[in-house]
Length: 393
Image 1: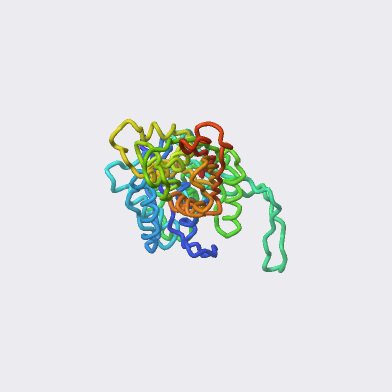
Image 2: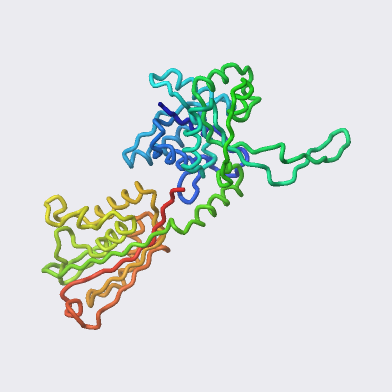
């Protein structure tokens, strides 16, 4: 059984006051379109996805593709949509019909609905083998009225006679394709179940989800950000610690900043305790081991390496796990050199490497009051705590 997903992303966002089309605008630092792409890419029963875009949005789509290429994922070449939603759908169905892997079933979804859940997708797939089409819906809970133009007033409508239709919707491919081909003017239809029913395709309706709403206006975007931020389980904390002893030299590196000094730090790399500690904290926050596992100090590969490479590699790991940094708190522990005059430079360099605002980075320095190996000025230690957030729905 082959199941393809057609993701509709061809709208022009006329009701959204935004310089970007809504599908490419960000919700919680993640483009809206990516929520749907990620959901279907990761679903084990979806064989492939195809994305239908507006002919004027190729640049935006290419920017999205670059995000996935950085994760070693290549998105398919986009399908160019038509002047209406259903024209775009028929373009997508035509594309699938001409492919050697013509699917048994097709799921059609509007990317303007980013909050789809696996439970809905699973239910659609489980029901479709006994039905030609399966569609999620919601009942109407508000009171409704319609304007009577003859009497110039509103009259009551029984809300029990109405339902709200959602996507994703799943259909037998041959049946929904034939239904679209049979319609002379697709512009008169606004969803695929209506096209199906016009051609006497029986549809099974299943319970939808209130969170799976369609983003249309700025207030919808604000609601989406609040919906994601409400889930505190998306936050994780990581802690990192590193220490290096002094050796002969005339400078050392802390946080990517070169500091003149009477000694250097000993290590396989440049021994930047700040970047090592930060790298360790970030790896811990996403549950990806520690710096020694990724960049072992007993190999020639990382000999004399700039520690910024470790952090850059770790940032790619965070990106692959859809994780962003909320804030960084760093404590440098040493008697000498004095760190105060270098704090802002370190903060600026870490901001560049992590691509987060300097206001979300804090640098502290302290001593051990002459106690221990640090107090004897034998080396420098650093402790880092980070807060990160997973931006998956």
